[in-house]
Image 1: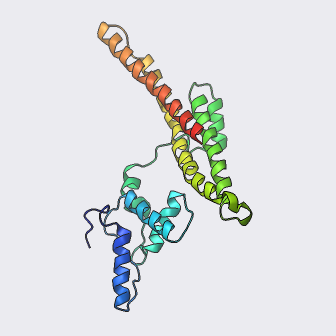
Image 2: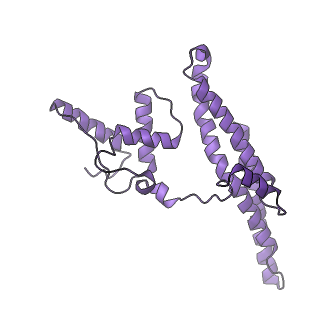
Length: 224
C-alpha cells in the first residue's frame, strides 16, 4: 500500500490492521517491507505505540528503531538499514569532530595552546555527563520493587534527561564553532568604511552566536 500521509495512517496502524485482517483469514503475517525512504517521525511514532502497548521503558532512539524493525518485521524480506532508509539519518550526517574524539583526545585538545575548544565545549561535555548519570540512575531504578514508591516519578524523569544528553553532546562542537565564527569576524579587513561596517555587523552576529550557544547549554543543564 502507498501511505501518502503517515500522520493520517501511521505505518504501525497499517501493519496492525493487516495483521487483524490476516487473523480473520486464519493466516499469519511473516513481516513487512518498506520500499524507499521513511521519515524518522513515522518510525518513532511506531516505537511509541509499541512501547505504550507493551508497557516498555525505552528512551534511546536507536533502541526504539530496533523495536520498530522487530515489531514490523522489516528484516523479513531484506535487511533494513536505518542509516540508509530513514530520511533524517541520510540527510543530517553528524559533523561533530570534537564530540567524536576519545575522552583523552578531547581533554588534550582543550589543553592545547588555542582559545577553542574552551570552557563552553568543556561545560557542554560535563553537563552531558551529568545528565547521562541522572538518566543512568533512573534506568537502574524504575521497575525495581524496593523503589516502587518513586517509580512513576522516575519514569517521567528519564525521557527528558535522555533528551538533554542528546541535545548537549552536539553543543560540544557548536560552542567551538560559534567562537571561531566570532574570531573570523574579528580578522576581517577594516580598510574602508564599507569593510568596517561589514566587519562590525559580522562581529555582532558572531558575538550573539557565541553567547547564545553556551546560554542554551546552561538552560538545558539547569532544566536537568
